[in-house]
Image: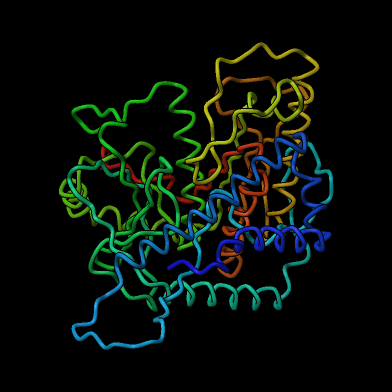
Length: 418
């Protein structure tokens, strides 16, 4: 029987949440920095994110209940049995360590930047402790098996080496990240010391050629490519990742596993080559149609997507003509974003080389437009923190829906070319 005290629990929690938010001045300041949306639209999006967190709790409870082992001998007890507590997976806007504020401007000219003062040893020690605590926390998370059947297609994201302190899983298991279509959870499959990351796709929702190539129209391709790169950044928090070519899809578990087995040697060699990377290349892309919404050409409505799992990367509707004044505001906002991203990342690098940065003389595009291309020379001690900051920046610029693409000595692995 339901406890009468639980009937007012929801209202009590909401009241306490409002009280706590009002006492935190830093939250109000961060809200002021989240673009130029109206308070109503921004509040609506944040309410959606809170609702998604609550749904995650319900889903996590269901998964625990479904996978909880049953004791062979039932022992009556009047005391309630506590279920194991799992860390709550983050929805589309995970709460991450804030990226520090940066100076407002960067030199516009293309130049090689040398950092005279390397990061302090104390920062390196803090990074090591932080990485160890993250790895330790992951090891304590119970793994929920993923049912990979031949009724679903499998989109393959990337592969990393299994940490020596981690225990390989004998069966595929679910991850906390949402998959490529935000309808299912991503999964991991361990095979001979490597961990492969993928997403199940419903067959009725994808079009494949006879050779297994994903067929997408232009707008679908824009959305899917943004989701592809965004998920790669999330998965890099599990380990340095060798991406697979965009659109790599297998028709069922058997085809997936047979291709991994057939190309395993080439995959491992490519991953080994990637791990020798000293200069990492970052390319940042923006959608003019989305930036135009933020600078006031149109209101950013219609963005309350109940099923989105991360940055929505919504395909732009039929592009409208952008007038000169609006284009100037678009380019100015994109330039500020590019400057802030570089300023946040270059302290981790021994050297950095800016290949290009968007300027007020740049044009417009109805596709992904590159606004920053820069290379960073990174020492081993700074790599994990650098990668984590790239992912943080992806969410810091959530409203702009920027696409941040990171590549090393090997850009990606292609089954078609191996």
